[in-house]
Image 1 (cartoon, helix red, strand yellow):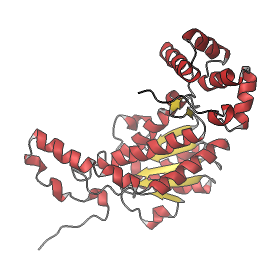
Image 2 (cartoon, rainbow, N blue to C red; image 1 turned 180 degrees about the horizontal axis):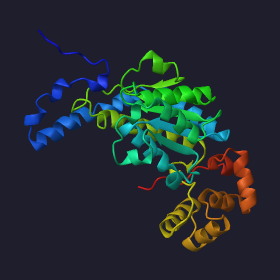
Image 3 (cartoon, rainbow, N blue to C red; image 1 turned 120 degrees about the horizontal axis):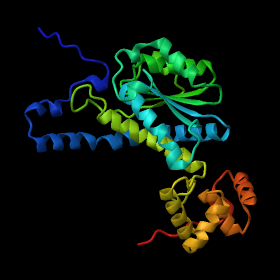
Image 4 (spheres, helix red, strand yellow; image 1 turned 45 degrees about the horizontal axis):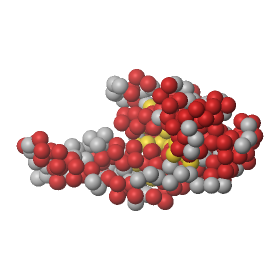
Length: 308
C-alpha cells in the first residue's frame, strides 16, 4: 500500500530526470542542472504578453508619480529586493521609486527567518510601513504560488487602492488569485533537488523581474537606442563612463564631453540634448519633459550605429 501524497504545487514535486543525482559525478551534476536550466527561458517567454502588461502598468505608475513594490518571502523576497536595489545605480532612479519588501525584514536577506512567510499581520504592517497607497503597483512573488505573507500583502495593497500582480511558478489557489489583477506564471516544473526553488523558479523569477523593470525604464526614456544614458556621474568611474557615452553619441572629443557634462549638472541625457539642440540645461530639460523623457523624440535622430 502506497502512502505517497502528490503535492499540488509543481515546484514541490520530484523530478524524474534527476532521481539518480545523488550518485552522479560532478560533471554529470553540471549537465543535469544545465539541461533543466535550458527550459527556463521558454517558460518565461510563454508569459510574454503578461510581462508586457506589467511593463505598461509600471510605466503608467511611474509617470503618474507612483512606485513599484515587490513583496516576497525567502528566495522570492531576496530577488525582489535585489532587483529594486539595482535601479538607482543602473538608471539613476530615486531609491523610493522601486522597493523590495521581504518577510522577516532586512535580516532575512542573509539569514532565513523561520515562519516569517506565515505571519499575515506582518504582511499588513510591512506594506503600511513602506507607505503603499493608491497609485502604486505591488507585485507579489511566490514561487509556489501559495505563500500566505504574499497573499495577505496583495490583499492589503488592493484594499489601499494599489494595482497588483503576482509572479509564481506554480498555479496559485483562487484565494490568492482574487487579489492579483495580473498573473505572470512561468511554469518551470519540478526542481533538480525537490523543492529547491532558488534554482529554476528563482532563475525564471529573476528573468521576469529584470524584464519588467528594464522595460519600464526603457519606456521612460532612460536609454538612447541601447545606450544607458540616464546616468548620474557621481564618482570617477561613472564620470569616465558618462564622458565616453557623450563622446560616442555626440562625436566630440573628451574635453568637450567633459564640459557638456559639467554644464548639464552631471546628467548624460541632458548633456546630449544640450549638444544636439544647442540649448542650455533648463531648455534641454524642458524639451525632454515635453517628450516624456525620450531623447530620440527630442533630438529627432537615431543613436550612432553599433561598431563592428
